Image (cartoon, rainbow, N blue to C red; front, side):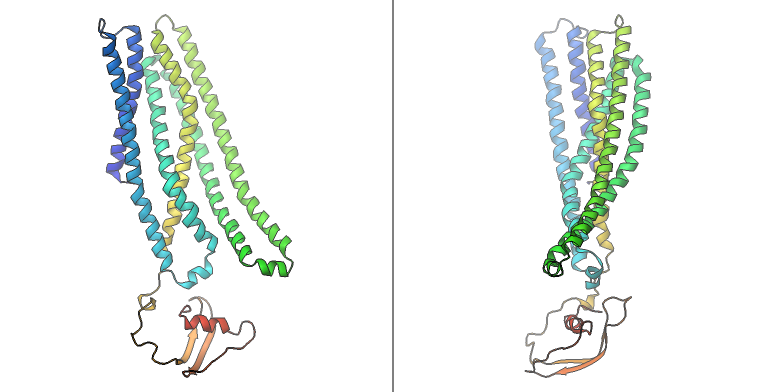
Length: 374
């Protein structure tokens, strides 16, 4: 995103947002109890409460604008760098790289980077601050509840770390097994005529089902892991709410009802926020893996400068003549020669055809004339 300054600014804005939000709730509780500024008119309390709400809304708007501006340029730079690397790649790269992999990078991964990564990262930061702010609010309202909060929060971090490791690997496997599905589908469409001519529909359908099942298994397993995590978050939330309720009942004579209600409401908020914060963290991390896969295009070996296109002279072609002297060519540097010492002289106006069995080099000769071979 926007770097260290952008991150620090975002943290400050988000902190101010939750300070104003939780402060308005505390202010409302203290006003109801009449513990501060006794004798002041109601409009004074309403003005302070409304001012906090307005400032919190302004912080939310500033944070969203900052996220939009900070995430647009990095994604554009990643896309342009990957696109230029693919355009400058030699033909050998396309011979060895499935087209489905390239399509998946420039469709699914780009979509995740443009839309999902900023969204999930923004939501993860927001939910994390809500989680921390809720715990702090509970401790301010009821400091004696620190033991229960410490135990519940520690178990939550333990479960979240355990779930995050497995979920990240499963989602990486899901992304890896998605490319073979797209490649097989595209190749089947391109060779549909041959598949039907040789009556191979059942074999290709079975192969597609096998690849799709492998991809679906990763997704299904990851969903089971998410339900595992959500179940434990609900258990921890029940412990936190139950502990808070018991403590409030036991100490009802020593706690203000307004602060007791605020502490209980923030404990209930832990139910919703805990699982969502973990899920948004996983989604943001997976989306960052898309950036890692897209940046791998930068390591593609580009065409040599001399092999790039150069504009021919203005009078070209002056004559339709082709002369090949001891032409040797191969598809890649680590493969044997497919054309060995070809000598041809084609005079202007001649019509020449290449005749030979399969594998004799007819297509290779045409590719060599187009300078697509090494």
